[in-house]
Length: 54
Image 1 (cartoon, rainbow, N blue to C red):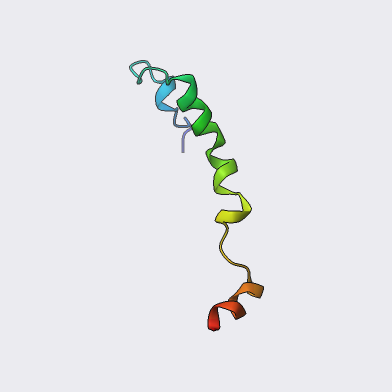
Image 2: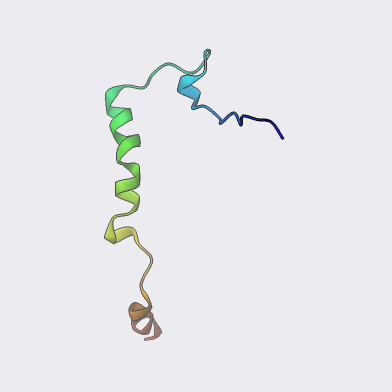
């Protein structure tokens, strides 16, 4: 096993990587986790399962 493990780099850190994104695209990418974890997008909790049996 090697002494050092080389972690993968982001494509933007590669020497021939893609051009940097526009600021609006960067904001969307950074906010994605916050949006995905918003309460409206979470699966129903166990308490809500009783409501589905109607």
